[in-house]
Length: 243
Image 1 (cartoon, rainbow, N blue to C red):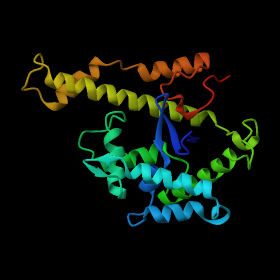
Image 2 (image 1 turned 180 degrees about the horizontal axis):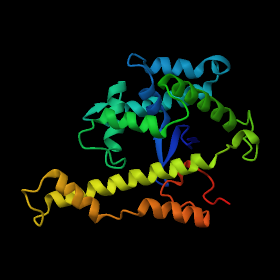
Image 3 (image 1 turned 60 degrees about the horizontal axis):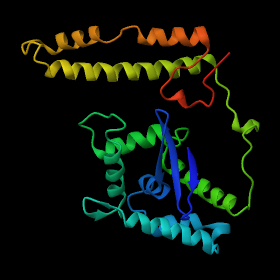
Image 4 (image 1 turned 90 degrees about the vertical axis):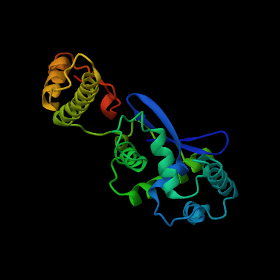
């Protein structure tokens, strides 16, 4: 995840989903991660704490982002409460994240937070505090109070064992296979060619016979033979070729 400072003074959080970049105003994520009774005033006070207490520029930026959030409407109501923000974000990512139709907007928002926002942290409080730290550091960088991180520094690198890469690739391919199975099953279930008297098990077996059974094995064969990682998501890795 990365934070982006905009010309307006607002800050957006970027995350990758299937090689596509998505941007969300960072105050939305803060509202989703905060407790139900946390007000905008408390979020503002947390950001302004310490060395930034008398920083008028940062103060104006935070107030601007909070005002913009309140000017955004969902179901003809402004995004003031935590639940309204959760429903707003969940509804906008419902189709893109390909979640089941019975999942609520809150379920989809939770899936987004757990799987795409600061996934190395497990609790909402830890993610909230990390975003606060990132926002303060970004503002310091914009004002030339600190230097950019060196991409070649050891702290920016990670060590992956072969098993880590294999497991990530297997997990992605299994998810892709299950999505294909679901779509094929739904088409067969609606098709007039399929007998209405056929059981769900029969239709499921027919759907499994329709899709490519060897797509997972072919992905591993290609990876092991060429060293090229043929992935829709890049598995969150900067490097997609291994030797």
